[in-house]
Length: 579
Image (cartoon, rainbow, N blue to C red; front, side, top):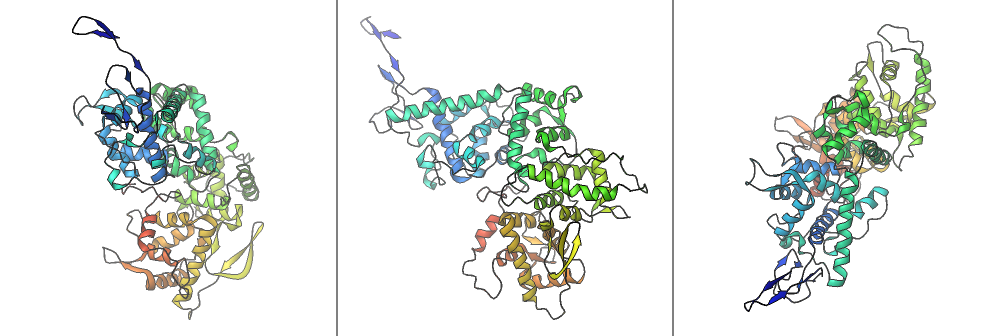
């Protein structure tokens, strides 16, 4: 490269790819903390290194402010700003979306805009209708997949200590308020010798993470998805629902290719439309619906290959009034088969089979009296959520085996036979009764002269016990699931269901009424409709000690309320009101 000077002499100009650190003095322009020298003998930073600098900053912020975040949470935050669910957002829209999970960057920064639109370009590129004409969009599904490739998230997935962040200035804390308006690249990249090799490695890692996924065929994508499901099955109750929208689809339906791309992003896979079609064929083959895949077929396909539960019974589906001579053999064999299936999963500590099964059934709304022999689909989905695939005919057999003459099914009995520790009475007696191969306590009646303080202390002790066994977050989730308005108040009709989701049984009638009256006396609150309801926050705060004990170690009420509105297993990721 060269030019003619005023005298007509040819002058040459060379550009060498040399990183110039911020510590070196220069009067040249700065782009996101990286210096570009604009003179003869130019030294410059390759654009892919600048891009890596921006993406590293976003990753480090995410690790610092939301270490337990999931791809589903990030995707939903972006979709809240994407009214057409096209998969693309302009940089200002993306900044607004990611701010919901604590990632702050300057949407007007040229370095940020260039990096995001170069590395994650949205097909079609130009904004139409909602933004400024000619404004480029970012493929946020691809961005979410790359953000979660940070070593800290991989270490968390494997249960290892979280490594130090690559950019120490943002490794562990939320950016200071004064820095929130700055461009992402303003973090110090180090000097010329140290900065460029790091950025070169980061740029290559980002390139390979995108290229690797783009090279997967349908079967390879299924294997990746199965590995993620198998890993999360071992973690705890409700983990599949929390991480993958696929496990929250209530009714079987055809999933479109566009929706399949979004669901795959929950598994860290940013796939193209042609890859989505390849995934459909891998799941269903010739039976695949045109331009989509059946939701139940996909759910079954991503579960581990050994998840099929064979009940070993030849008898066809029961019909009302039909002879049930196989019911005793099924009742005897099913709990043992379920325990064996759970043992193969190598559950994480605290992942008791009964608690998992109980939570999955409660999430489908079929744990107790509202379950009938017509709820085969809900039972099948609940079993899939705990990693078990049961054929439709066998699901019908299970429902009929646990049904009374009216057709009402109590799957509480199934949970107790699989794991006697799945349920316990809040007010037990020392008397034991046989249930299957187990001995269980029975409930006593609350005495007429029993004080409200004594009743509340027994409830608190039961809640503390469950919090110790299954985690405080699961206790919070059990109550929050019965408070869809997030008012912090609970009606009497929901108290028994909330406790039962935790495995705490209380019989309807006098015991339930006395327990409610005792709780309302201390934790009652007036709702907007004028009714008296239970203040959930006060109850859960009170569970940490009995009334006669000091409360000096009790957390502040505002801290607990903030925790109440967070996702389970992630104390730092707020839940949007519409979720």
